[in-house]
Image 1: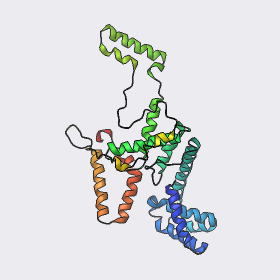
Image 2: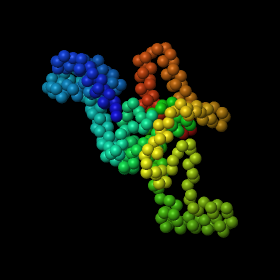
Image 3: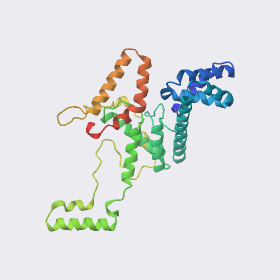
Image 4: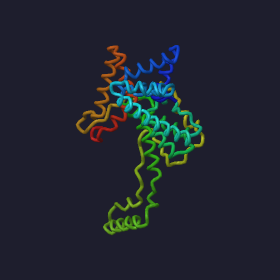
Amino acid sequence: MATEYTVAKAALAALLAERSDDRARQSLCEQQIRNKIVLHSAQGWQIFCAWEWLEQHDRLRAEGFRQSLALPEQLTTCVFGCGETLRREHAARRAVDLAWADWDWTFGTYTPLKFSIGLLEKLAMLARMTPGEGWMIAGELGRRVRTRLQTTSSTIRSLQPRDVESVVEEIRRSRLPRGDDRPAAAAAASAGHAGSRVSRGSIELGRAEGRPLSDRSSGVVDLAFPRRSSSLDLLDQLELDLSRSPPRRPSGNRNPRGRRSLHDRIRTMIEREARRETRDNRRTVAQASADWRERHEEAWLDALPDHWK
């Protein structure tokens, strides 16, 4: 599996391999940092990997180089931030590997090119909740992606944090005590209310069971039910050729007056701008936009208030 750290490290390794000796490689790493230190928020991992190489090969020279910078605290802040993210990344990966030991970090045709720290930490949370069920849960996550593509205006064809969140929340709901498991006092209070309704001849007596509403969303599996033992049975649908059942483009959520939701209008504006950048052959800008959409768009749109969705 690839992450932002491993991709940046591989890119630096390719550049270092083109240099003939360590002195040339030191110069390369120093130049990488000089060129990118101002943009460390966007290119922090390249800076981090270059600094990591310098420290590993000559710690004293690396420190001297840091002190020679106009603003050495910028490098310190950048390296510290990436180091903390890397620590969280390793912790999340260890949690997943421990809970889903035989899983290979794939989701069929929906495997991300890169795993963001947000996605990794949500997968770690889900893995701790479902030890030993990696393959089965991976199949369910793949189906959530397909459902999102078919029932929303999303065009991101890889697993996103929101897909993992939906499974986490469903598992949490499935593990809540059932109506008959409520504390005796609560049950007695409920019975008392039901009795008072009976004395008035109210038809609301049927609510005393506390039966939850069924989930009617498309493609949703009730994780509270017993699961099938064969992971291959659960993954066979995941690998279907999408051309046989292309995602439907929804008409968009409508408010009572017929207007599309602000959520969908913002997404449409982003898509229109991305197409314009591609059409105008602005490759660098288009790639930066595509990277942002892959990592942040879904979470950003999900953060909108409910009345804008």
